Length: 286
Image 1 (cartoon, helix red, strand yellow):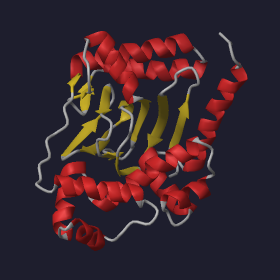
Image 2: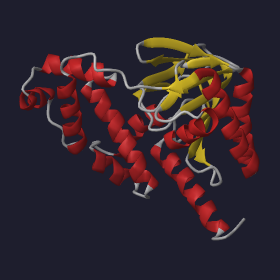
Image 3: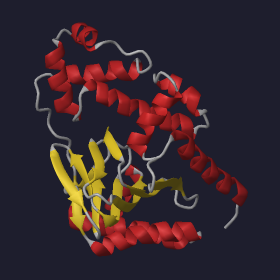
Image 4: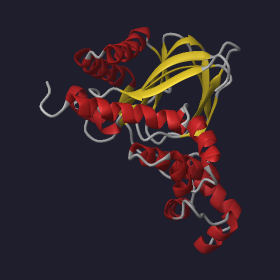
């Protein structure tokens, strides 16, 4: 991590289904990546810029960056001093359950704007972090539900999958399935296209239209996501790197940090501490 930068990616045992990141970045640049969860990123200082789909947007103090699951996006500093933010990553099912409870909204729910100017909601996100840091489970859970309900009411709604924009959408889906199955030993683009009965350039266009990034970028993102699950299960980073197809642990470190914001070792230690805290509570502990 660059001099002057800091990041803590962690979980609070009494806030299941939610990851937290508190970071200050200056030269940090997130590669195009996705999350399985939602992202609520409240900027407290500086300005972050990020590509969200085909748009370049910025978020400053009092604003929240909102990213739906499986939405490609980047992230980097828009000003020389960088940016500081507190981010929560609520599980998709948790957000949808709140949408059903508060808005009587059934089915896929999400947000229609990548950046919202809502200082009060931003303070609620900061409050979730502070409550978790203080071990105040009631406050953390209450604030999580309050901010999610507020954001859904003001900036959310039912999200329908976009209709495929390319005639090769079926080829793109088949290519994705092949890459998922052969993640550790993927074929070349030429071989993949030939097996699907199309051309490399046609497959590139179709895949990008369907998933917002070319196959090689999607594969790197998928490898990082699978590595996270392995790390969560206790797999050593070096073994996780090989299992998902990275050449070695340094390659995993580089790509993991560019997507998650912290190295895999720090991520796994935080996860292990969260599990230990749960175990220390013991069964039946109020």
